[in-house]
Figure 1 (tube, one colour):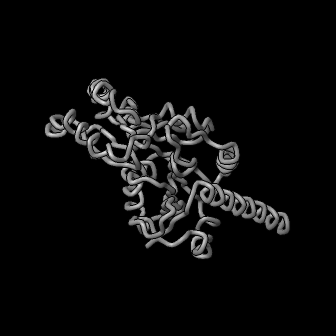
Figure 2 (cartoon, helix red, strand yellow; figure 1 turned 90 degrees about the vertical axis):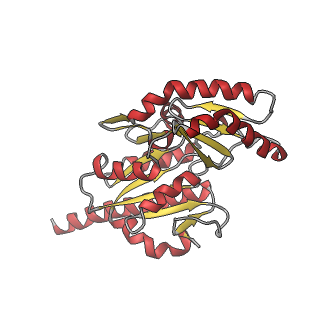
Figure 3 (cartoon, rainbow, N blue to C red; figure 1 turned 135 degrees about the horizontal axis):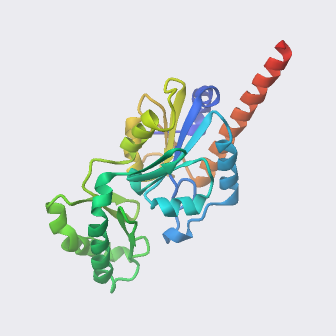
Length: 280
């Protein structure tokens, strides 16, 4: 079972304080509490301010990684200098980098047609939201009558089953959401490794990757960071099965975690300046 991160703070603090950090953060359920509808999840000004302050530190690089579309993610956060990763890694944009997975480009038209078909099929079913994110598609059922979830899932597979059989798209489950994506071997874990190796830093030995997320899709990232960095699950259930060795209970605790990192980095920077001044 994962341990609460703040209970093990003395163990993780030295790396957070003394090494350059490559900080990966999920959005929904991590930087913001989960909301009934995706458009309701707005970033609190206090979270935006601490992200902006961290982004100004030379020894911190930040990537926001989400199932949301890239354009939606950038619009919600609006902080220059960050790397934004949308659609579970299929598209990203950051300093000196803009990339869309080739298979995602090829699937745009198909996903658009599926979205139109599902909106029609789910029309009589209140509580279902079909969200076309260009390169992936989400079916949100958080507002659906719990007694109708099984029926809705059967209806979904009735509409898309023939495409799954042809390996044109893949089906994934998240928190109260069903995801349809291009049939490509790509996920948040592979994205983390790709960014770590090729984009965000060349000094791999000095940099410590840190990943914080709450969703099932974040487990791929937790898995690839075993023995390489810090993985933190956001959950209120410490018994929840996860690949992450640590957990935080809420977006509020994630904010506290970010504040602690900032305070350590500032103390380290000004401590180094004081030492240099004394030896001059």
